[in-house]
Image 1 (spheres, rainbow, N blue to C red):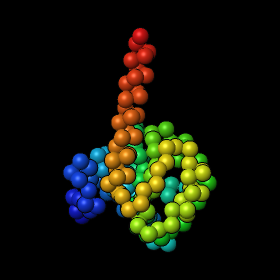
Image 2 (image 1 turned 90 degrees about the horizontal axis):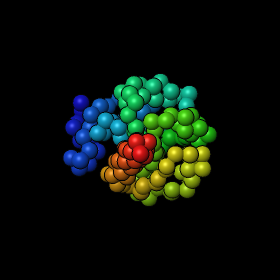
Image 3 (image 1 turned 180 degrees about the horizontal axis):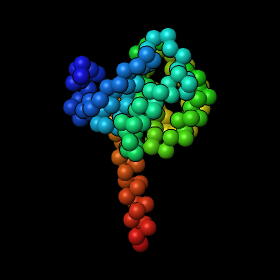
Image 4 (image 1 turned 180 degrees about the vertical axis):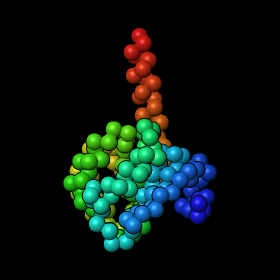
Length: 152
C-alpha cells in the first residue's frame, strides 16, 4: 500500500484497501467508507464503471457502505446512471467533496437523480467521512430497533 494515510485524515479512519483502475482509484476506509477519485477526463457512467463497481462490491460483501466522490480531477458524470446505484441495497448514502473555489451548482443535477441520502462538502474530505460514518451508525441503529420491535 502506497501510504497508510494518503488523505491525511484522523486515525479514526483506517485505510484497509486500495483498488486502482483506468478510470479511478478507490480507497476503502474502515472497510465500508469508499473514497473514489476519478481520473482526469473520464466520462463516468454505469458502463464505464461497472467492472470497478463489481470489484468493490466483492470487497464489501454484504456490508452497508457509503460512497464519497472526492473530486480532485475534472471529469464528466452521467447523472441518469444514479438509477443503478439506487438498486444497490447495501449502498446507504453518497457525498461529493469539491475542492475549495469550485462552483457547487454543477452537482445540483446529480442530486436531482440521486434517491439515496446525498450531501455536498466543500473541501472537507474528513467532514464527509465523519458524515459517512454517522450514516452507517444510523443504519446499524435502525436495524437494531427493527429487530427489537419484531421481538416485542
